[in-house]
Image (cartoon, rainbow, N blue to C red; front, side, top):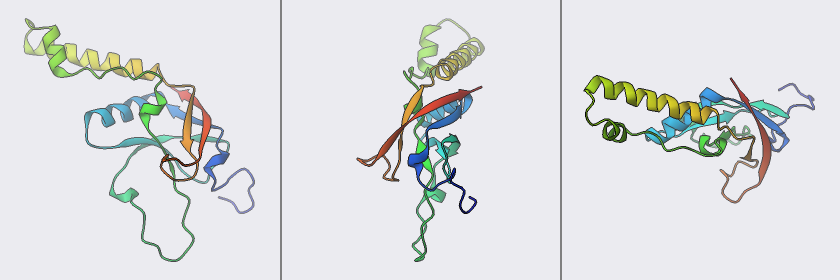
Length: 155
């Protein structure tokens, strides 16, 4: 951030819109639903009116650093991919795909499951919401201040 640049700020409340790539939303949602990992779309400071949200896997590196007495850096904003999809379709499970094709050989079942997953991903890519609420005060959305922003879907 450039000192004195009025268009940039440590305040996520300045954000009016975020841009997300449709594939990033589908990837984050699939990883969140299919694994123990928490995958989000992250908006990093300094904040301005229009921001880009990028794919990010939360982990130990996201834990708060020990207090060294200095001023804390502003936290990035994490957007849950479920909040970015207007109607999350159920993820196709292997057992369901196999049940739909009981007489098919293994290779055919694999192919049909792959097609079902790709169809699910396409449905998610086409269902990116037009807006989302962001945590504007770093509270993790637990009763804290939120800001409603527009979502621009890329790709």
